[in-house]
Image (cartoon, rainbow, N blue to C red):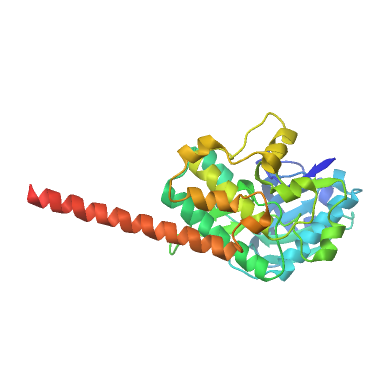
Length: 313
């Protein structure tokens, strides 16, 4: 059994001589952004226009892996097809003279949700709900264009801060995405399990046909993690995690830790079968926005009440 996932972590500067003369002539290397199972992401300047870019390049040691090439091609197709502010812009793509596929993407400056969790341990009700509601909006747009992600997790969602206007939430890494039923067959081995074990839907673990609802499950699991500081299930190994997602009921201790207004939303999003979950990512977003509005309204009422008591005193 193979578990395929895409989690990029910070890495020390790596030599880039393996690029080849064509890529070195096109891009000025300025450091490495992240290192993953199949690819590296480099910070570069495009010499053609002087613009900063994120250059994603298949690792040289994966150049003979058919699965790596399929995954990379799937991600290129996804970025080329999808249009939404919650996604990085694809500027160019190609294959180097050394046979390594590459893509030049918008260079994003921000923090992933996993980095936020490491920094703050957990987020507030308003912060976590707003982030997942915004992510659900982007996921809804992706689904509407015939794509589902299959590997949503805190490392694949980034929060970008802007000096003016609201923060931007961006969905990353479409290497395991399904663009159509043909890509599902080409991008998955019959005995493989694709995704990140802490956020995988039961149907992914069981190896049965998956659909957009697996992304809804992951959004619910991520909201749980943002609020509590840890994923909904814990185990010492990936197999234990997957068994819990597939078979175990919703943890009782989380029912005590999670805000009452969000508990039924999370439990529904993380239902064991797709039919029990929210019918769409947009429906999940609506439920989260209503909870958010009620929380803000309740806070305002308490503030007004406190002011009246102060005046009365």
